[in-house]
Structures are given as C-alpha cells and as structure tokens.
Image 1 (cartoon, rainbow, N blue to C red):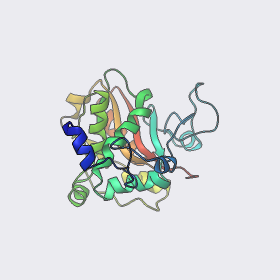
Image 2: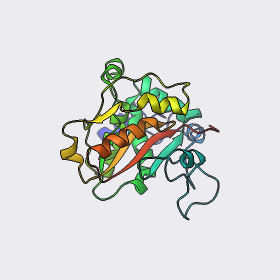
Image 3: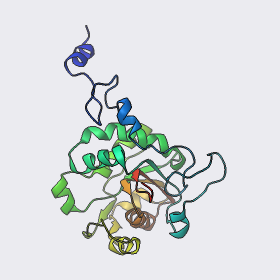
Amino acid sequence: MGMQSLLRLAYPPQCVGCGALVEEAFSLCGPCWRETPFITGLVCDACGVPLPGEAGGAAVLCDDCMRIERPWARGRTAMLYRDNGRRMVLALKHGDRLDLVRPASRWLEGVADPCIETETVIVPVPAHYSRLVKRRYNQAAMLAQALAARTRHPYMPGLLRRVRGTRVQDGMSVDARFANLSGAIQPAPAASERLAGRPVLLVDDVMTSGATLSSATEATYAAGAQSVCVVALARVAKDA
C-alpha cells in the first residue's frame, strides 16, 4: 500500500464546511455544497452579482453598478455572502481556517477567466498593519497567492498599502463607506516599476459596496496600470 493510501486511511478527507467524510480533500460534502450560494449564469459585468436572464449576450450591469460608477473594468465573485458562503468567509477571515484558501482559490479561478489577460498580474487588496497584527495574516493576500499559483500568473504583493486605518464599516451607509476608504490605499514606492503598463487583477475576500476595491483600483491606476479588473470570493447582495 502506498504512502498516499496510508495517509488517507489515517486521515480521511473531510468536508471543509462541516467535517463530514468526503471523497476528495479540500472539498464540500453534498449538503454543504447545496447550502453554498455559488454564482452561476448571467451576472453583472462589474461586480459579478447574479442577474435574471440567460448568459451569453451583451454585458449587463446590476442596479448598484448602474448607480455607482466603478473605476475597474470588470468584476466577478464566486458566491453570495450568505448561508454557507458567509460562514466560510468568516471562518477564513477570523477563524484561522487557512485550509479554506485552497478550495476558495479553485472557486475564484472558476469565475475569474473574463478578468484575466495573458499579461495579467495578480495583486491583493492590502490590510492595514494594525489588522495584520491582530489577525496575523491578510486573507486577501492568501487568496491572491493561491489564485496566482492556479492560473500561473505573477503574484505581486506589497505594491499597494493602507496608509491609514479605517473604521469597521458594518452598518455604514454606502456614502459613508466610500468616505471612510477615500485615499486609504496608496501605491507603494515600487508599484510604478512593477505595474506600469500591465493589466492587473485585484483580489479581495468580500465585496459589499465596492468602496475598498474602488480605493485599491484608484491606487493601482495611480501606479500606471494599463487596466484593472477585480475578483472577490463573496458578494454581499441586497436579497442575500
């Protein structure tokens, strides 16, 4: 019996959602898969939220993205921020569940194709140092690094930085969120050399109003990026 078989006997693969036994490591069991609101079909071309209708026609925008001008070119998200999607995002963000990075990067890869060009580089949305001290890692950076490895595109951390801390945005209005993030993210000194003339894919864990991704996009363009697209693991939607 090979080493892999012995390991499977000793440590059988478990669902990353509930811990039930599954066939494949770093996957979801049937019930958890059904409780995870993955986004498929027709989506908003700017934020990836699902829309009524059939995919395959012209690009369409959701009500939020028609009302709020997005500085990025295209955006996609893998799931809605509710039910098992919300539980997994919170476990990754606050529960040290780094084992979720591997399946999450696979789900991100499944939706990111419209946002990736041949020369695209992958950049994480930065965390302020005070949050890094508290959490010990930036979940957006973990997702971006894993996505870059899966897609074989360059991973470029450290080129954007949060120059000031921001208040927790839970309960804020859309306008307050954008005011809170205004100017909070800036290009690092080396950003212009690395990003000038390149298409960039920004990666974050959750998109709510889009204020954080807007600030990061503006900083990326300030560094000379040719174009910017965004991808997030989960999207907060009005009906979620």
